[in-house]
Length: 339
Image (cartoon, rainbow, N blue to C red):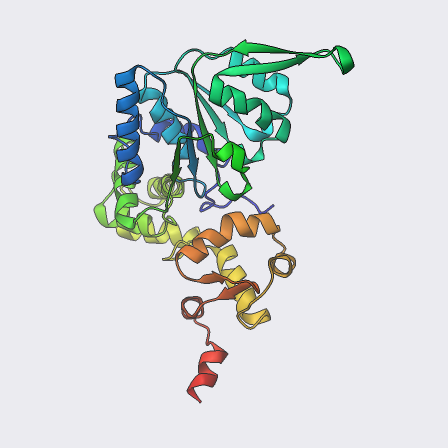
């Protein structure tokens, strides 16, 4: 795996405390994802009116867009407790049973990376989600018997970056399924301004827009860049984040005006220079870039595709005309068409 990158949308080691400080506590404070907020508001208001827990919620989309934050907001708005776990952490049925039996009525169980649950755990979850019951097998062989425990009425909030890896039976048990999209630059600008206020950072508006433009349309990346630019401003300037200070800091971090770093540009350059712009298979691209296939597919590709620099075809990955232009390279195919 590559070294830590400032623009990595995945949570890094030092992010947790920083994220907790800046995390919105209510839907009113949460910027962006307007349709999801409106739907959640209605579903939560209806559940409160009926004095029932909200239906199970599945949140999916690229990392860093606010899935964990929304899970905490749902718990706050419903005035419920929240327990946090992840698919890989639930290895044995006993792990899940211990969590479920300790929940209280109305509690939220947040399962991150829910697509990584193993089949045994999934099958235990089905009756728990539908009937609020836990079936435990006692003993082995012919003498084995099933004991059914009643569970409190709780809500599972699942989060995944790969909804396609979720089995249909599990996906069908979620009453509310929401896709979190990349943010617009003006929304990221609002998030940067809000974070600067909370952290008492002197931030000029052109600088906020500059950070927003280079944050890969991802709040987690925006907040991380803000933190790095703040450090630069304190050491190299008077602490105020101006447009000039921001540009210098981002130049030092090697983040260009599209939010690409050296690794992004290298991937595009290899596709263009070694494979004539593509198509090139993921396996071959992984070998040529010395990056894991999963890292290319999950971390680099989504944003390169979002900004129109990369296309995924049935034959493989293809660099677009915009990628050639950004890297200052000529597209031989286009040149040939002109001759």
